[in-house]
Length: 68
Image: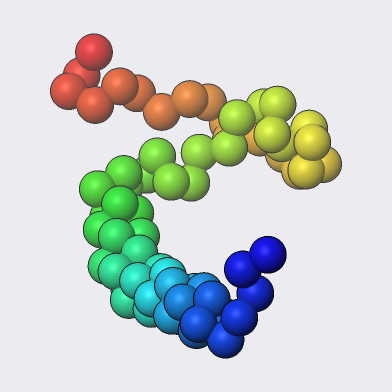
C-alpha cells in the first residue's frame, strides 16, 4: 500500500491547489459573472422547488429573452 510521507505530501498539495482554485477562480470570478449574465433568471423559483421548500413559487415564468 502506498502510504508513505511522499504520498501524503502529494495528496496535500493537490488538495491545497483545489481549494485555492475553488476560492479564487470559481467563487471570486465565475459565480459573479454567471449571476450577472443570468439577470432575473437567478431569482425565478419553479413551482416544484417551491413545494419542496414550502414557500410560494414565482408568480409566473419569465418571458424568453429576445421577445420569443
